[in-house]
Image (cartoon, rainbow, N blue to C red; front, side):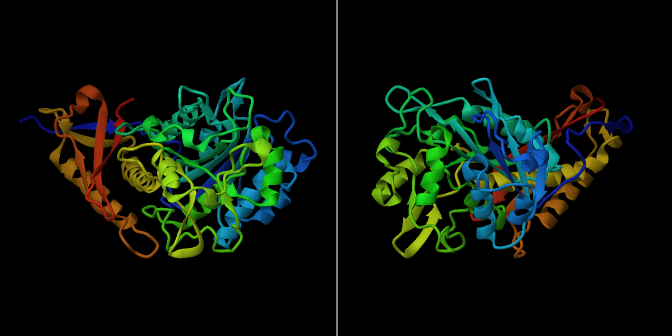
Length: 435
């Protein structure tokens, strides 16, 4: 048998060499594309955010010092940032960006890449608030606009597709609050909640759509001044729950995430119906069957349980998918695993990997060495703040049949079993050699 040869791993597709495993880090992106002059009367705020800048803040007071007040964008950004910090109850890192996410009449969310790059890849979950419509008229039930597809495409540039690595290895999940108060192609603010289209068929695992808002007079006043009567929404609360939740935890967890824990969620509602008639579809008007139907179609909405009086909870943590990555928690676990794997592989950039020239594959010694290192790093880091394992099983493989000398690519497969499940999830990373 010929002796072993060397090959260098010269390109690892990363935005940078900083690997954050902190699943609590959130970002907020506010789309002002429907405003002609969004920063009028907010000169100080414009100096911090007017040119697609991203700012890291720790509390609401820091945002106020940058010029944010309840007059900017009808008070919506202030409301969500306040929701976020009020629910957490302490200082926390939050990346904030304001951007025009329209290119003519089409959605353009390249800002997702910009904010993740500015955070050095630290954002695990990004809340997006936009007044662009999510639905349009269709045959029978409603249909989807281009909004979701554009957001998923931008997220996939960072996160990759299922079983396909990303150009940039810094994955995130998107929590979307969009306009649900009208159809994009119908000039009426009327939405029938029984006609919502099934979002799980889209197979967009990087996106979760949050329906609903707190139906107070103050929230209604903001909504009525928004373009298209866009609901104010629950984005701030959803991100607060994700900040507090470890990666494997569902934000619908009743024992942990009562949205009304501060007694300030007085009248949960969908926030759409017939705006002309001031019909916002209060949660009390939706029986359990109807809530379940909406949830089955892929939407997250507020709900209540008889055994928990006065408590209000998110219905689940689902994404717009019905496959392996059908929940935010499964995505967060996969994203954390992938970050860990990349942190292991990064030292091999411009280093040597032993190749068996008789097979073209990695040598058995290097295979075992790298596999053991990834497994050890997963075991050390896939742990929640309570010291509990976030996955109940894992194993790492390199395909022994892959001819690295021919393909110039090294594929890594990591299989993990989520906590409390017998389902095996496969995530894949690919590394380019000698490029």
